[in-house]
Length: 327
Image (cartoon, rainbow, N blue to C red; front, side, top):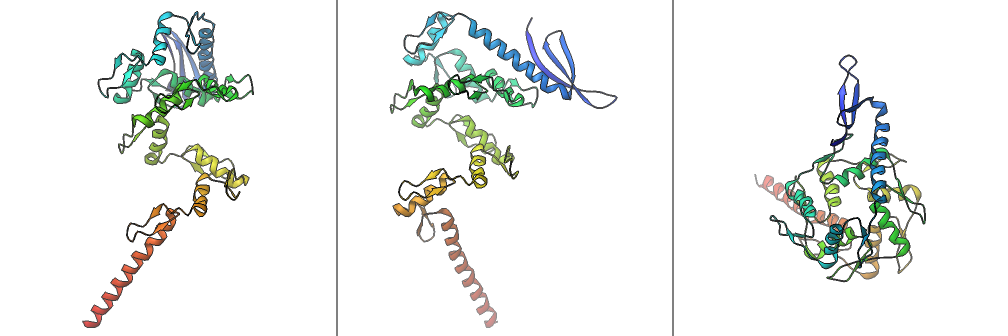
């Protein structure tokens, strides 16, 4: 019998209050009110974690002789070894990209089709891969079940924990064959490779702008939607990016983590440090497209341009006065 874990929202016809059907599997349905939904999420996450734990218990006798990663089946190892050998027999007929496994090709094709078959039963958000949905559920539960055994830091995803652990070991097993740069995760290497290939597979459905990383597209989309999901818990101001919120909080804390290595002056924002350094270098990268004058800050160009428009306005007003006199 096929498992089907999910929430279905219903409404009580008499009271008009929402309640939920929570279906563990076909034939097993639990009815819950809205206040119990968090418990459901905890149950759902527990099921996922239980499944993950069972996978960990499976014997993995087939080990990669290059990176020591182990697998339960020989064919899993064979597929994995293609990462190291660059053997990519599966071909995308849309963009020509090659893949080491048929499942990777299937997932990739969803970039072109826009298919997102996995849906969150709580907020309705859709995902192209089941693993992304599993990770997303932790946002609703706030659960971070994966702990670093060295420093104790907690993570909502196993991949985040694995990447984090490389900080302690300084291990960077993934190598770019173009420039030689090393990375602690395969996803980091994958994103980096797009610098060399120029590939930007993530396209905005509104304006058509393309991005090399999916999170950049997510952030960009908020320009169109106006969404600002990150809130300052001190003053309540909202931001579209976590980085902007982090930078903003320096106003409240007075923290200035960016130091000039020439004069030692500190700044709360990296961009302010960059602008400050132009004082030392004499660099003026921003140019007026009317007269060609250069400035160290873009805001100075904007101010300067007003002198051109103001001059034209004064000349126009003077010409109109002369016309009136002649009449």
